Length: 391
Image (cartoon, rainbow, N blue to C red):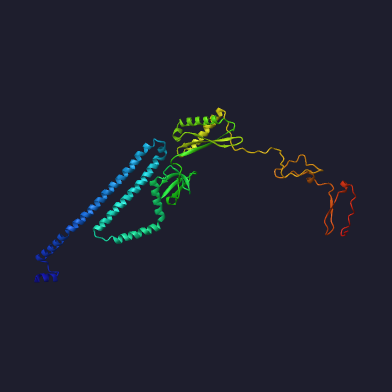
């Protein structure tokens, strides 16, 4: 005991065999007491990591197979008229890539984040301050970048709901055109004049997709009122049957050409409304082709097409009645004076000054008096007083 005390007091004294045996026994006892805990914690962490990695791999692989299956089954739909327009290759590719990327990233974040929290919990680390800090950071990020978050969330729902895709013609209120690219934050459109529009998904309040479902082609055929309606209807229906039997119009027409009836009747014409259900985005081409064929067939059948609304044309040289003054008892209007559309003709007596106009005399403070021209009346004019004198 004395030797042990001296050794502890003086570090320069080398330890003896008894001291080494004592320290080794204490270390072995401490390891023997805690090795089961270490082993359990290590095995638990290893199990968490292995399960997280395997689960992440399986989920990502399942998502990839699901996206590939979507791309494989889409060409079988292309054989139908509806699938040929809605499920084009570029649209399917971008939509599947966007959906797959979102799903894979979400799955990885959830799985690995949960695994990290479980590993920290296995080390007996208090997660309450960490979760509280993460919550505060999330709230700050939500308020500071709410527009960015809104753009991403809106883009995700747009893609999942398939509101539009590449190749669609849409009307987004602020801009309209053909969709060139669909992203999680921005949608790219090409306008009618070739301009590229970048729309933030969060700012789009309403969308009108002109390329989904079907479209309608409307044509107004104007003919003379004395034409045979049954003949006109039969001719138009024959044109529709011929158009539906030829390529590529047999794919663009999704229904028969129908004559809806008389849309308007005028004195010199009547309008017949023709309608047909078409592939989305192809209505304008079908309308042009129908007009072309209707014009050629009507010319061959002797059916005359007239255009425009009836117009009331005023006859040339007609004198208006309203606003015309009564003719004078002494003079007549000029023979060659053309009446105006807004004013009455002016008599020649009013346009030409008389040779001897009547003279007006008036005394100061008295009403004026008109004296007839002596050359016309034959009477002797009264004497005119000198200036400055009054009767």
